[in-house]
Length: 591
Image (cartoon, rainbow, N blue to C red):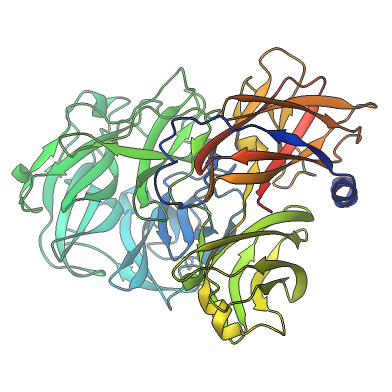
């Protein structure tokens, strides 16, 4: 109870400080813009960018399976081996995700215990979750399937029975693969009934629930790296990756209970038959393995997911932070997949928890085509908020009515702000900024037109919305362990700056649609009893010194800077703090 009272008090203080910060905003003179050679300046605007840090969520999420569809990421994973949980997130960072157990197994069946490695897949218009389970005895592990009762992967599922070939041998980590219009089932299994080694098998399917032919042995764990920690020797955690008409199976080798757990590759030859083992080429070395320097051990059991705009491939895998963790502390992590000249995937080294990773392309863009239209209301669904906060909103729109219109923003049927939509030329996209109020817990966000506007003309021209907030704890830090937890922060984390040499934070991959003047709003806490300062740089240009009034601990105020940003990619650095400061966020708004 005491912790709850403290949390409530902190959040009330934050709300009061936020209102105070808006009232006493510090406006500083304009900084000149220094042009940089950024790859993001020349292409079309595709979202405000930003970064994230691993792990994707601070809870054990072994064997993560992630898909993206219609504006949301969905993840399922081995949830204590007792049920099937699905998480739903607007970004690849699941720290504020919704969570739901979609299926509990009945007791006293062959699939009541040890539920492992659920795989969520959207196949031919329906959602499926494949999982392994047994009756409490490992030798009885088999593959089973759930099918969503409707179109919602976050809804109800029906148990559809076992997925098996005629041998009905031990099987785990199964999932469907589609190639040239044909479905296949790929899984890890035993040749016989003794736990000697786990092989990679494939079989044809007549539909997502039925294996229609004999299993084929594709690969066995006979490479040195695959045999680490054994026996038994391991190939498991098979995942499917597609690229330019080719298909790849990425599997996990070595003991999953060891830090040597790594990722291997099977590549189907161009024009090859998936059921012919000789048509698959196996990489001689693992594509990702532990990195002691980065503090990542046992990277494995992955899945693949596209960026929101479909232009990038991302790998999501689990890893631990200690070579002695074993099956504990396995948390989902992500990084971008690149491709070499031979058309093969490259994962690179696993990234440390301190690495600020640019978000997948198109992240944070919530398309109107995924919203629900109901008369004069366009609903974008629920947005999360840890504390009461004012958050920036960017609307991408067309207004060819000949007059400026007012767009009202509602959260949970309460007016939360309004945004003016100036006239746009024919076929021109406009960008309008505002700030809206979110209470603790967030709520359903909807757009409406004011009484004087024609809803049919304007709502039909809304293309997308974005929340142009950059959380400070995801920025690149000049010092280790600069990120700290703070329950009064907007996402319960802060970046701490001190007067220690090297103490700094860089917001990278900051994208804006047009070059011009922008307001940079910093949520800052100054726990001291006197003013403190910090310096600001934009794209390498040395900036002014900003002043932060004393706030007390866990109370945030807002400091505002007006500066020029270039179209596309920008880097904004804060440094040279005169004393301890905690940064909650940076908001970007254009007048």
